[in-house]
Length: 412
Image (cartoon, rainbow, N blue to C red; front, top):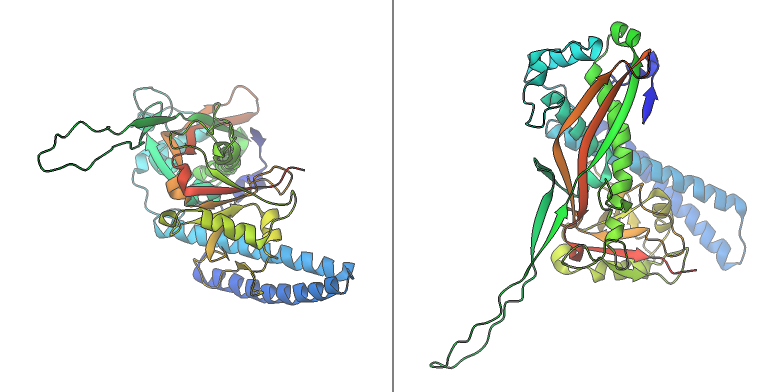
């Protein structure tokens, strides 16, 4: 993806977004105020429906408040992610561990001068490795903005692929007398699955004059540009990627999906809703109880904002809302007592769609990163722009389908 940026956009890339506990506290206060307004308006709407009367004014008010609740909760989730990242050293100003290396990289950005320091740590493949600190910055930013990276397992690899072995069991036993013979019993069987990275790229551009004149942090600008593109492409692939030059998406492993036979442990089980366009509280609770108790401790929901707006209106048998907002910093919103992660790549509610998944995604989905972000400075292809062709090899797939369940909408 090619991007030509203005000086203003270039400067924005150097701005550091600040997130602290006081920011989250004010957001939580606003969220809970709107949540109370939502419940009151929903009660008015329920009364109207009992009288078989649908006031468009109340409906419009309800949808506006529902949207505001969603936006505030998303802001809290984003702030929580930034605070968590900074607590382990990401996103902070930290001390540069290799100043010579970083200075060489900046000089290469501006003028294209090749210095020996820039090639330190280059692997046997040759090529053009970014500075270690900058490579970490990209990875840390992706963790902040990519919901799947926040909840899945990530494995760094240094080879062309990663093969995982599965114990399919099969060992047998038997009861015998004291002096009876002990015949050989069955031995366990093993299966394997290979995670092969595909290559993702971004190709932002700036004029040479901008690079000469702008007093900015060039790494911060490029990291911001690449982060946006990589996070968008990864988000789609981790959910629905077909495995061709990209990760295999989570939803391709469901029963009947294109990757249903890829994992030796089988496919992700489905719960089918009664409707093609709506879901009930009982169906969500059924999904919870489909998951074995061994995997519920760290289980969570994933769905997109549109679906979350629908689920937010559901109540249990005691007239309590299934969805509950964040009440303290670091706590996500919950559905039926389990955290929920807003996942933009998940489908909307439609006939035969798979809009909701529930489970332990850290045990269920594996992301493999081929170590190293690479940058090629290209001042020739599109003068007067200098392109920074940036690549990273990423793969992914379901490593344990038993830890995840999905909801499928009825066929129309």
